[in-house]
Image 1 (cartoon, one colour):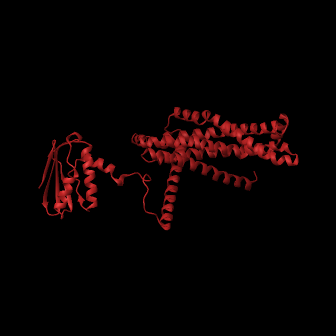
Image 2: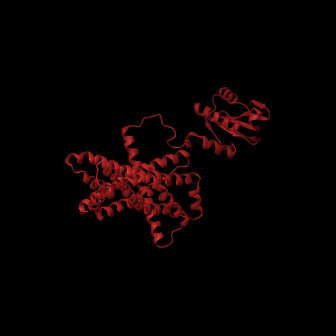
Image 3: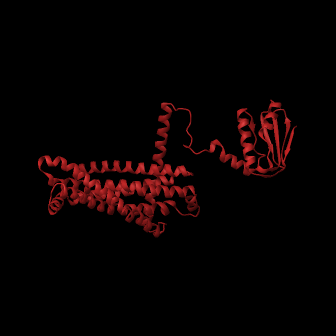
Length: 381
């Protein structure tokens, strides 16, 4: 048995059996008391090479701070190197919890990269497993959203109307400046590219047809959807993800409030309502952008361009574009809220969820556009 006492921080050892070492810790283990180092324990282990288990006795421990955590962390590393088992029952509960939080096993997934390289088959298996798990979570989320919408139709949805109004303002009126700029530039680009080719045939007037049909039928909705995916969808994911980190979503569940109705439903309704209106505005701005090129570069008359656009754009094109925008609104809201709900409990997880929400929204917009276009072609719209 050996003993170490310095500035009221005490540590001594005992050997109840040949393969067991008990570390007795007592006194005040504070930084200002200069607690003992692990060198004493290491020398004790070297003296008794048969040691296979270490126990702790902290009955005489009065006060402790991070110095005890640092000491125990070094002890754990030392025992891991020497293949010695540690019994933690004698350590105070608060110390055990802090050590558990700081252990490598509790590190967040994806923060540290593993050194080993996965084989091809293992990578395929992991990717397939992630795809199946993500698909199941997505289907479950869509089902819960459908149930929440059904409750809304029955008048039993539990959410604050002021939240719906706030989200409508954020995803509607506040998005007008960026939608105006992007849509006008897209219409201008369409007109400029079309004019380069139509000039060869003296058919500059048909620039109005190209810009009008393209913007009203699909491009206005697509550009608005992409803008809202990067602006509003990312905002939804960040807001709900932060609530996950702060355990506010768990608090809602504890109070018996459905997060799907309270958080997701207002955002889904707001974006589904605002997207068609923003799409109409984007169509107008795109046509104006094309008109700028037609009037100032192609020497077309304003009324001539207007009449050509009016004759080229049919009401069917408008309804197809509005249907695109309504679908995009639902997809963006669902993607943003889904990634927010799936967010982990860390700041980095919020960033990951936000990025994933934007990527998922844009991919969903492109895929749904292709599907709707094919369906419209089949039915002759």
